Image (cartoon, rainbow over all chains, first blue to last red; front, side):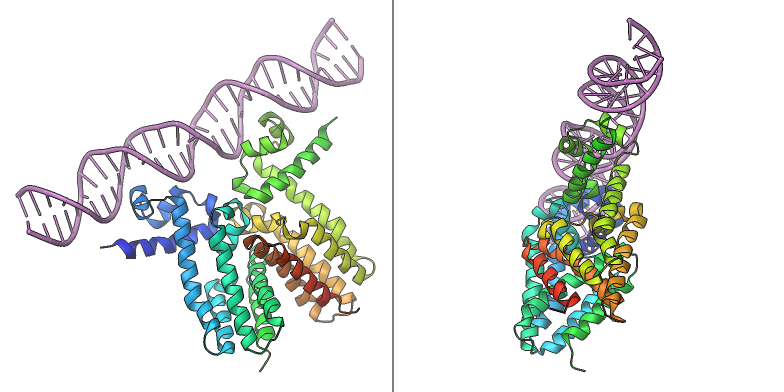
Length: 184
Length: 184
DNA sequence: CCGACTCTGTACCGATCGGTACAGACGATG
DNA sequence: CATCGTCTGTACCGATCGGTACAGAGTCGG
């Protein structure tokens, strides 16, 4: 019964491959090599082929963020939720060394294939953060702040990779920690 | 003597194709169809093939930004330079409907091929903006502000496309106009 | 009118693409 | 041991990939 666990392990590897090479750049040959799975196994786990692999990765990402980031933002102390978000995001993106697959898929032509998942991911994040900010005392600023914080995270990932300097990402997160949680 | 003008026209089309499909997604067949040029002409204009096409596009982008954005930031009135930058960026990215090719190339595996050009583009922009901000009165904030402004622009482009909502880009630019030019 | 040179359409190359077919290995159940 | 469903390696498919070769069309100065 290696079914679900095997698939989960494959999804984790797939996520890294898609992150590093993009959707088109992740060939089945490369995927096979990295996962250690032949085409037979691959198409047994993901009968829909490459598109289903990417969809599975997106679903897993969404579940992870839902549990680790969005839920803490929506429930409990809002300041704690924001602190949790910042810490989880810093860890998830490996301080700027790991890219955001959702952002990558949004940029290239495959956006149309996964438009719903991509938009849902960001829009859920944005509204969850806005909710926490509203409860934390930011009044009508909450919506704008939330949106700008997400753009800052995405942009910091792009710039960190473009300049090959993870410190860009760290500085962006530090600045937003001060901006979202002004109380000392 | 259609040489240089023909090449310039081809580069303009190439830029759009790469923006829409990414480097790997822009096949020679598609490039041929969009430019109206056969492989013979294509390889006559760009003997280095696809890599040289992308390099030519990157060079043209760099020249455009150098003249339209970086130079105004470095010389003349700093506030005017910043206003010019915001207006040119808004126009260039078509209010969020057009993507940043440099950012796209930075994310996928082709980054290594063009690492120097990509890093140069952002680093030139960052230092030019920081210079203007310093001269405009922002003291030691200038470096941080400049970097965060660039991340905001890149992130806003990603989010605008992910949510299929150019207003995200407009809101980000408006917010940064207020932040960089507080004087009314 | 002649080469010489620039340009371009077409045929073609080997490699690789994503995807399919299928035989057999494997483990559980009887 | 027989059987059945799950899993997997391998051979193969047509299509497309980026790139090359080359013949011929157009365009010059001489």
